[in-house]
View 1 (cartoon, rainbow, N blue to C red):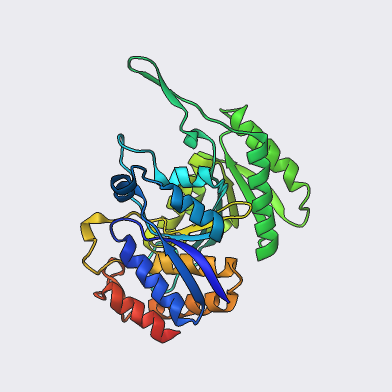
View 2 (cartoon, helix red, strand yellow):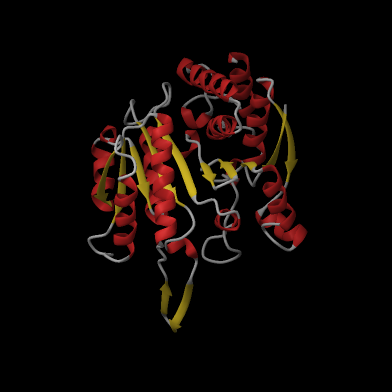
Length: 332
């Protein structure tokens, strides 16, 4: 069987790490027909839109995309292509596994938690305006529909993956209506999953508890903004954004993407660490039913990291992107 998948190489180191991931996937024998597109500044120059219509149509056809990091202008310029993509395709669930890997130095060596983030509303709805000069208002949108949908996704994932507990993170003590609605929906959905423990925690306390002892958590469920922050905090617990995978999932479509930046300062130098996108490809392969290949890639990657002989510079080694990739392929 040949899978048709949309490819977004991205900016900066994006083409290098996506190339590495594609090479590793190819080495498993899984057959994929890639349809490649540019986004962001390059697409704006070529097509007049940082998120071309042809790209959206391709993802709607294939139902699956693999995406490298994309530059988003800070403070000015076009709206984030990442946010637009999630909203356009209704990719309502952001999935971020946070797991320690042997050979990757971090403050903890046994973290294994899942962060699930609502992906379509909250303050990321982008509804902002200037009330009067010098006063800007940004609207926080929380709906019953989105809150229930993401809660059900989290509990379904917990059931499928054998997870035991889901913790909702909120600030309902202050934002009693918006975060209060999110929390109420979570609690009501939890009643349909009696075999899974459900509890909740205020977001500032959750951040402290994660730093003190991340092992006390199993799965975290969060609104968009809190989820964005805590998913990166979680990455920091296991070694950084360069080694964690990510996925944006909707009812029918899923986009699997690296969660680190495009690192333009090292682009083209062949020293980027492709581990995050390789692990992201593991999530993608599981999603399309190629579970055996996915587990082989994960095992090979973990072997190379644990051996510590061919690590990229960010992990304390001297290996190039190509050398690291070839080592993973040999380990397959």
